[in-house]
Image (cartoon, rainbow, N blue to C red; front, side, top):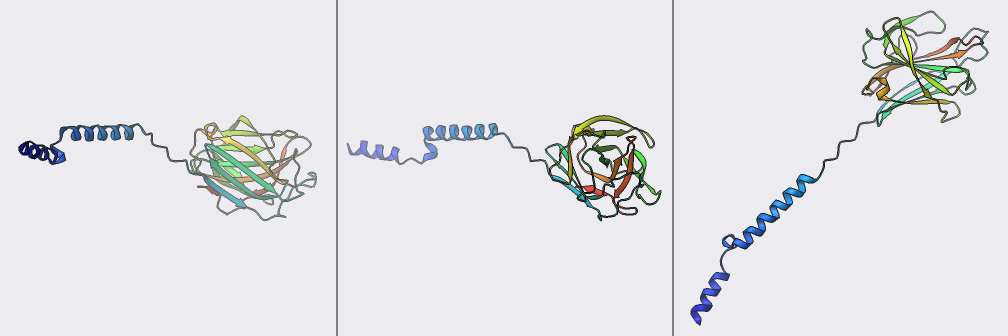
Amino acid sequence: MFATLVRSRARSAAPWWRNPTIIALGLCCLASCRTSDSLTPLSPAPAPVLHGSLTDAVGDASAPSSVPIHPDLASATLEVAGGILTITVTYRPGSWSTTRSVWFVLLDLDENPNTGFGEVPVSTSQPISETFGWEYQITAVDPAETSTGGITRALGPTSFSKVGTVPVTFPQPDAVQVAIPLSVLGNDDGRLRFRVMAAQWNSTLSAVLTDVMPEAGQLAGTVR
């Protein structure tokens, strides 16, 4: 009996690495953990929010006396988030009309002045222009007496074509806003240069330039 007890204790005292049952359970646990890890999907990193803005001195708008309202730019903000470019332009209070005033935001998507549409006006008091090279132009409101905006694409250094429309909203009393999917802009990544011009639709529905931002000789806005 004593010999049997000794043998039994000897078996129970055997190290764990010699126990086939424990080894099998350990291997199953490791396999289960690895399988669970392999099935856990990795969450994609959120796309960065891009931002750019410009401000302009108020009170500098000008136009012929035949145009009774002179839209006066105050600021512009461009934000890219979730594949959407949101453009918000503000006017000096009391200087614009919701249905007759229009702004033009020129987008240089590749940031190369030698591509896209070439010369753009940079002054309302003098016939001065600069080479900018925009690929898309966003306008609001366009046409006059509506609540829509226009999307225009450059066809070269001297020609362009309107390619679509976009709803216009008024998030604040003196702010005009549009939101455009980047897919409409050739799936651009949202990093770009931009300029802004303001105008007033006259009685013949021609846009008369009243203000520009930035002024001549100043750097264009950037979205980063």
